[in-house]
Each structure stands twice: as structure tokens, then as C-alpha cells.
Image (cartoon, rainbow, N blue to C red; front, top):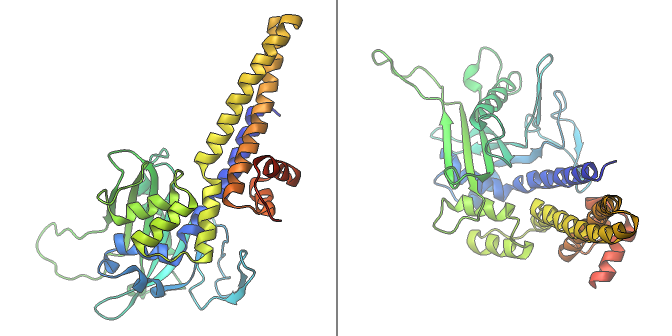
Length: 367
């Protein structure tokens, strides 16, 4: 297999791990509460800690799909092995699946009870993490599609025909990282509004049933006076330049978010799998290894022929570069988490290689 392909496959595996833990980090109820307070009008006057108990059950992450007919079945949490029965209706289909239609996988999907004039009202929300603000299509259009599916999926679970007034309001919230300067530090909502073309018709019923919200995150961490507090919070969580300790300090001091064990673990893993760390480590290793390889190849070329020597040197350089990139990545991981088994599992490298790097770097590790 060509070295470039090996590199792409390796990076893809790390990126998949990163995406998985990014979703689980967003699924923390205190993080969801901060998002709701800053974006959804129904929670605008509330404090995040008061919103947390309004989030029903356990927010479902797309890696654990709940298919139609299984919403009340016994489910096992793959993280801690705990089992439990989700209350009626609260088990959510993170995969919207209907015969003869396409399949939509939601990142974080959950129910929440919003305060209203007639008491609490149930709402359904979807949180999506997007690395690229311009993936080749308008995000808002995809958001409209998602909210439409979230409404149609309520048939026979939240409402029955003809009781359309039982339909629950839905929101699809998109967190777009690496946004351009124009979009960075912005929050934009799209919804359904009434427009009276001729005359005044008065109240004709509920229509404000869906909303698409787009949060643009700048590449740089938002300051206290840039954008909103939410931009700084999310920027902190997904920053590739802050250490786990620095992130914990910002969350605790600026947002009064306690560093619960699971939240702290997620942040540590995210730091270890940060794409910037991965790309920098591999790129640096490749560059150094390639330069050394070419240099060695040129020396060999004097004896074997310049062209053949350079070709061999480049091959050696690519191989050496990949190895050094791997070692640098392992070292970065161990500095944040010194568990050997975690490094082996997350990075997909042999235990012998992890122990060798730890010994060379003088890092005390545990199994």
C-alpha cells in the first residue's frame, strides 16, 4: 500500500474517533443547557443550571442508533455498561428511518421541557457539529430537511391523525467550526413566519413548529467581548491550541461548569485526538523523515547513481516520516493521558511502540 494512502487511512481513523467524542462532549447536559439558553427563545431568560433538569432522559448520540419499535426496549450504555429502560417516548430514534426513504443520522438528539404560558411544553432538538461551514451545500437547507424529518417522525408517537395540534416543536442547531470572518461569532435563526397577504385573518392555529439555528465559530478562540459567551464556551471545548487543563480552568472560572469525571475525561480525549495535534505530528514527522531520507539517498546516489539513490531515499524518507509522526502522536497522547491501554485503543498502535515512546520520553505510564 502506498504511504500516502496509509497516511490517509490512519488520519481518517483518528478523525472518526475525534468526531465520536466531540458528539459525546456536546451531549453533556450542562453543555446542552448553555446552548439552549443562548439560542432558543423559550430558554432565553433562564440560567443553564435550571435548564439541565428539563432535559429528559439521556441525550442520544448517533453512534448508538435506536430503530423504530425499539424506543422502550432495554438498552445498554456502551461507555459504562449500565442498563435501563427508557421511559415511554423518550427513547429517540437517532436514525430517522422510514421504509423506501433515505436514512438520516442525528449527532445529538433529545427531548426538553420548555416553560410556557400554559405550563411546560415538550420540544425535540437536534445538535449537529460541522467542521466546515461550506461543505458544498447550504447548511440551512440541510437543517430544514432535518427538522422536517423530526416532525414527520412524530406520527404515532407524539401525535395521531387528525390531532395535529399535538405535534411538538423541533429545533436543529448547527455548530459550524472554522467559519469565515464574516460568519464567525454569529448566531442566526431561520423559522416559519406568518405573512398576511390580503386582510387580517387573525389566529389560525400553531405554525411556529420548527427552527434552524446556525452558530458560526471563528478559527480563533472568541474573547470575552467577541460574539457571545456561547462562542467562547464552544470555542474552548473544540480548541486545538488549549490544553485540557486550560480548558478546564476556563469552563470552571468563566462558566461555572464543574469538571465532572465524565466531562473531564471527554475533554482529555478530545485534546489527545485533536486534528491539529494529529496533523502537526504526522506532518512534522514526515517532513523530518523525508529530508533525512533524501539526504541519505543523495549520499547513496553518489555510489549507486543519483536518480536511483534519490528514489530510494524518498521511499525511506516516507517510511521514516510516518514512523516519526506516529511516535510524536503517541508522545502527545501520553502527556495528557498516561494509560497505555487507552493509547493502544485510541491510536491503534502496538503496545510495544507505546512503551518504547514512553521510555524514550521519560513518561511514567500505567496499564
